[in-house]
Length: 519
Image (tube, rainbow, N blue to C red):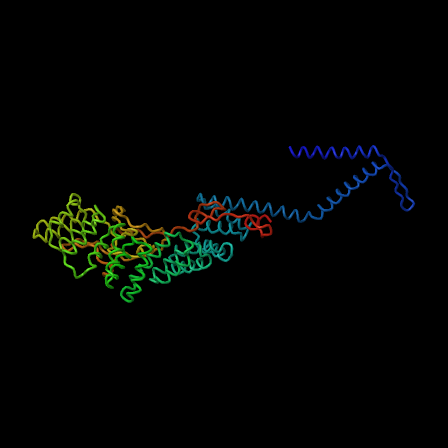
């Protein structure tokens, strides 16, 4: 509406001007070098307008002729860019659909039309991966790693290719370089962290975690730091007891329900005479997650007390998590040591209809302590077929003690307290760990544990001798997940990649991507 009004006002002004000139006629005389021309003002104005129009037309024609080579070259580049875009787009679709021949052909076309472009290199790498050409994929990833704008992507691909050929040293080197180039890359940080953990270099792993702290959420950072501190404390317990105690206490502060850290901290505090503090941290962890290691550590805080006094303390601890089988087992074991067999039988009674293996073994120990060898053997026989108890489990392997890394995949904080085979967690589950990158490893398998007459105490203390994990079955070695996915659009970084918001380019910024192809 505003434009219409403005147009009408402009037309009215022009009409008024023409009428004003028509009402005031005049003559224009041009004399030059003996030439004299006389005409009216309106005719002179019309002649000037025609002359200007002719000059503009001539200038346009001359300008088009002069610029025609550049215009034709730009048109060719635009057509070439459009063909390259179509080749890359169709090539990525062919890779996603599994059409190997089409992917190869379109990759060759894209490389001919737009050589060296980031998406061209990505298509070449994925087409090579799809066809099984590992050398070709590695060449493409190396080309990407040599460019500043695609270095992280190229190192990611080289990392995966190194894992596929079981060259873990090269994979670690690529991850180290990627982590140094872009500290926010989660996959690189996790890979380097786990490589250092596999070497037992806990101090270096802690330093790396601090450098990459900004890439983790607060809960993940606290959990991973607590696990690393616990691992270092366990490793230095014998050589540097004070440092081990400080590390364990910091781990408990970060993750109050991390059972291995609590058990170790309580043991070291008790050795230093800090019984009240040891009592407090065990009590906090027990309320969150009753665990046999906590009960055993609590029972061993005062080594000089009588069995009856120990039973009273264990009974008080069990009442802080009523109805939990771990409390009943701890009370039953302490009652047997105190020769209060009726109290032990009363504590275990709610679990005798469907006893687990530890309940059956403890009942066998109770019957034997009372002198009934026949009933003891009967309970031992029932233990062979009883339901399994929760145990430290990671990637299909069961260990009799907590370990900071999975012996199968090398994952940090992989062990969970749960029932093996079924995958059922215990009544009070442990804090779940974040999923981290898989680093294959091949640990030696140990035979399954067979119950015997002395198995009334199943889990040893954390300062006991380390034993090999117990496999539930012979697992298949896991394969590394592909870092460079085979299904994604040209502007999609793929599943699991970090999404970066696009920003408007600066006015004077150098064109990139498709703009660069079209230039």
